[in-house]
Image (tube, rainbow, N blue to C red; front, side, top):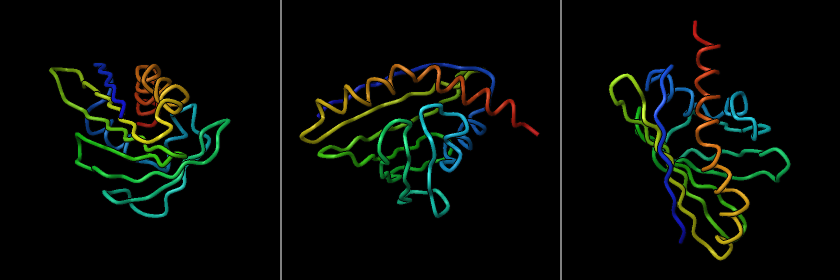
Length: 141
């Protein structure tokens, strides 16, 4: 097993706005530049299964395993010979929201997938969340 955590604090959006955008799986590709599309056939909640198509990579099946509004969203990606559990936690701290990303990988090919996928997700955590806030601001009514 391999596990790593990354924390950031950001301004510009409320915890509810961040939660609503992050849990809106069908629109992840609108603010995540590394996702080509997502396919989800039901309302997202614990147990929801969906598919994403990362740019330049094969489709990946995922399942939501924690859905605790507005603080914790966890999904499991089913990779060849490995599973990647990704947890996003959001906590209000004064006028900011702390976003904690935790990735845990298990399986025979953990050593490969942590290099190919997980390290990039962790390194891009700040940029991805700034992109999400820009998306929120651009789409406020």
